Image (cartoon, rainbow, N blue to C red):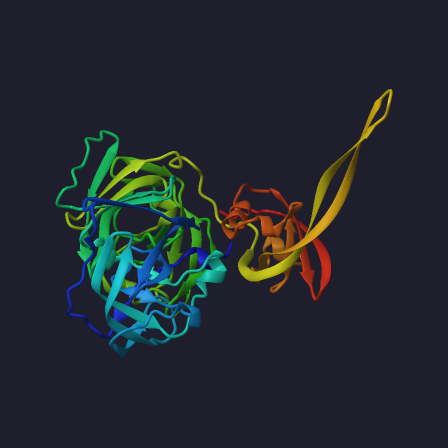
Length: 445
């Protein structure tokens, strides 16, 4: 089913080339390692990044070669310097968009600092990622942060370690697999193998972009020289939104994916149409990408200075792959006042000459607090939620008896992916009227 905000995939053609030198360097006492906590939202890494003294939140995206800023408000003013107009084009069928390029900005992550960074600023937030991910997202950063460092990503602990390549030494690791990569336009591409039921039992070698900014497991391009075709079972869908508009294709799964020695069984895969990915296909050798749905199953060492990735499987390695099986596209809807009850115990003691009586009074009080709200952005036609009668813009009150403000948006998404035929009960508000709905998740592939 459609999970449009699940696939944040950026490939840009920039009508401006920056010749200035930039790069993150260690400052302060510790010049060998910096550890940073991150948020994991829909398999994406959301990092704290300080720009010109302003604290912002960025997605770490190995699939981009420029730093992109697309969500600024008056409260987020960062004093952009040396701006000129540029044009950006990305995935999707739409036109290029106007933006600004700003030079000589200062970036900081703890004691990692770069004083000469270039930012591309999209003047309109086409993606509205903050509402789709349930947390504030200001932009994306990739190559500029990674190019001079060795980076270890631990998806389970939600920690990233940035190492100085001059002093870092890899430990011996028999359970690790090191995969070399080549850059194309400052983006890393690795070789991996896939099996498809359309061509029998053989494996096809593919060249894939390693894309930590895509939360899906895999994307593959049809009609490439590698005989890649959509499997026998699939459904057509709007896969996501790129900078240049909607991205269409078929959702399915493949029997197996091989990354070095690691074999991953039955991953979900999206097969993109040629129109939506025209810009991405300019690199003729490319067959697709792997995203957070695969990467989160490993500890990953990203080593741009030495052109290699190192993978070590974690506890998520054998967990299954599923799509959203509800047909619902849920987004953050701001905050609303929620009435909450609290019960206090009041103990009264009565002392008498011969005996002592104890009584307990239960006193109910109420408080009003601002809590997160979620609404339905879209409902896929003929999906379980659609057939149950749910509509776009319905405001969700509860899911399976639990108040919706107790969920994070990632937990709601996970609930819609749990298992085939799982019963979902929802209470929603439509035109200020509360309504109840019930349906079962349906596994299409």
